[in-house]
Length: 401
Image (cartoon, rainbow, N blue to C red):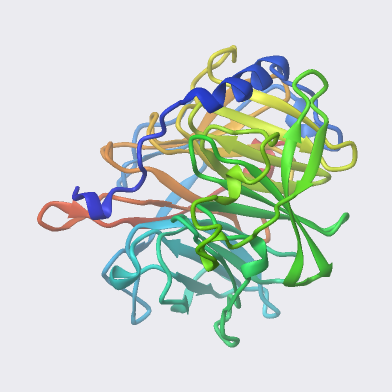
């Protein structure tokens, strides 16, 4: 793959990560998560079956479907390349919309697209909801039914999009200009949490002035007590350092000297009072209790009794409270976690070793899981594969109870 199309720069640990290493060691060990009783139960997924016709290994009773191939039409719309973060949105007719980012430079795609499903799961239409942006990696859904699409680039922005495409997207500059990865909304406290994909990235919190209006508010950065795990939030002085030549050389993550570095912030998701997020540089999954502001490590590949999950990336939570993490690398799996730090594969994509799993999201009923293989499996131009999007259906609620 050319330098232009490389998915990630290599995460390297520097001297600034010493504090983060000490923090993760102090906060290591899994915790049973309040309100997530299913997550505390032992995993009982069972062995995955042999690869199906699409090259996907699934539990007994599940089946896969190919939804879209990049650069080929879906319901008359050309599906974008390098599909990344995604989410679903319920519709009034009992159908739903799956939204997917395109992590590619603007001239080659960028932005985000959507696929509209009828109540029976058939595809109704597909269309673009965001264009003229760059390297849209992950993001997150809002409780009021919009999609926040994040640019993973220096001084990148977050864009609020209408999944139906009826309303034009809006750039939400108040959420900061940095190498965004993903965002999650806490609807109880009315805060947004954001990750940053840098080897010394930060965890941010945004407090809107007039929730749910995201046009103005206070951007803060986390400072974590390495002994107690308590998070203190400190205001970021300049949310868009690129707007002024005097602050151009002061990236957002370096503005508050006593903030805490995280090694490659990736996916983030809110569920029942907990913010879950991943850091790929050290293969950890974190849980922040939004009521107590206590941060814990709930999975660490170095200490887990079942270290089958690596290359941690996008994250989602099932309706039963199970945390699902997609792999960027590793064995190209989506794994499920329990409250004891155990991980088990829910599915695996085979024969696409140069790809990664992105955009996991359940439909509103919880019986269909959508995800993409970002760089596979169909070579279209000079041997380069540009991505495919899948649906897996089956008794998820029973399996993940």
